[in-house]
Image 1: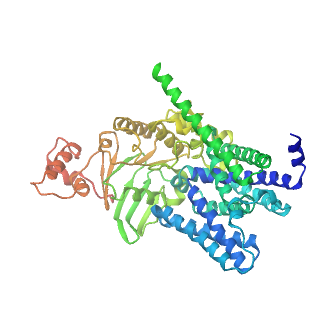
Image 2 (image 1 turned 90 degrees about the horizontal axis):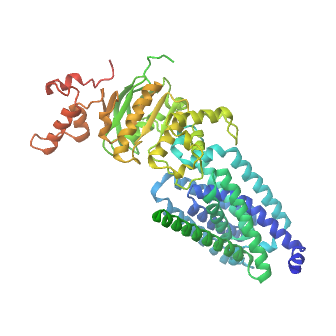
Image 3 (image 1 turned 60 degrees about the vertical axis):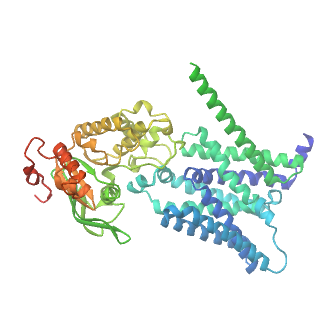
Length: 280
Length: 276
C-alpha cells in the first residue's frame, strides 16, 4: 500500500491517470454512438488508417499530430462517402481501406531515413510517458466532442434509432453521417498517441457494451460507458505498476476479464430464471 | 388550408433509380379522411411511392403536392412509420422517449423534454393504448406493441396524414388483421388521412376507402375493391387456359367493385382516373 502512494506521487503516474480520465470521457461518448450505430468495424478501420498518417508524417518530416489528424480525418470522410454509396459492400470496402492505410504507414516508415518509430508503441501506446501538452490537447478534444454530442443529441438519437424517420422529420442526417466518423477519427488520433490503437478499440467497444445492459437512454449509456472506461483505466494502470507489465495491455486485460465475467453472469442468470419459470 | 383540397395529389410522376425506371406516369389522389391501401408485388415501387410523398426522393418528372405543399415542406404534419427500424432490441430507449422523438422539436429543450412535449407523447401513446408501458424499455416489447409505439411516435407529430410502410411485417397474420381494423377505427375517430403500404390482401376486407395497385405505375379504385385492370397490373395478363387467369377472376369476384353484380360492369365502375 505504501508503494502505491509513493507511485501516485510521481508526475508521470499522475499524468497517466489523468490521461485515462480524459480518454474515458471521449471514448464513452463516441464509443456509445459507435456501438448503437453498429460502426465498430468502421471505427476499427479509421483507427488503423491512422498509422498511414503516422508514416506520412515521418516520411515527409512533417509534425506528427496535425499530419496524422488530417490523414485520418480524410480517411474517415472517405469511409463516410463509401458507406453512403455502396450500401451492402461497405464492410468489404472498409476492410480494404483499413489494410491499405496500415500498409502505407509501414512502407513510408521503412522508406524514411534514420530513426524508425516503433510499431508496438502505436499499437499499445505509452500512457506512462504522456507529456502535459498532450493532456491539454485531449482536454480540448473532450470539450469539443461533448459539445457536439450535446448539440446534436436529439438528431443523433433519432438517426441511431432509425435513419429514415429521422430524415423524414428533417434531421440533418447527411451531415451526421459524415460528422460521426469524423468525430471518431478525432477521438482515435488523440488517444492512439497516448494509449495505443488496440486500447482505443477496446475502450470504444467494451465499456459501451457493458453500459448498454442497464442504460435507459443514450445519454445514460454514454455516462455509464465513461464510468466503466474510467474504472478499467485506473485499475489496469495500478495493476500494471504493481506487477510491472505493459500498461495498455493490462488495461485491456482488466476490461476483457470484466466483460467475459459479466456476460457469463448474465447468461447464467438468464438460464436460472428460465429454469425457475419452467419449474413453476 | 382548404378542407376539400386533396391531401396527396400526384400528377404524371416518374422516378428512376440510376436510369432504371421504377415508377412512370403516376396519377394519384387522396382525399381528406381517406384510408388508401397501397398494394403490389415486391420491387413494384410501393416504397418508392411512399418516399416520394415524404420528399425523401425527388421525382424525375411530374408534380407532387402533399397537404398543398411540395413534399419535404409538409413533413411536419406527416406521421411516418417506416418499414423497419434498424434499432436492435438492446437499444437503450424507453417507450416514452421513443414517442417523444415524434414531437416537434421546437417545443423541446435540449435534454429534458418540456411538460408540453411529454403530455403530447403520452397522449399519443394513450391513443394506441400503450400509455401504461411508457416507462418500459422499447426492446422489451413484443413486435405488435413496438409497432403501436412507432405509430404513437408518428401521431405525436400532430399528424394530419399518416403514412405506414408495411406496418404489419413484424406482426403475425392474425394480429395484422386486427391491426388494420384498429388503424381504420383510429383514422375515422381522429379524421386522419392514412396511406398504408401492404402486400397483405386481408387489408381489403377492412374498412379502407381506396386502393392503389402499384407495379411500375399506379391504378386506383375507390372503396375496398380491386378491379380487373388493377389485378392484371399486379399479376399480369394471362390466357384463359392459365390457372392464374382463374385466380384473377376469383379475386375480382371477391374483391371486385360489384361483388354480386355482372362482371361486365367492372370497367365502368372502376374509376381509375383521378381527374374527375
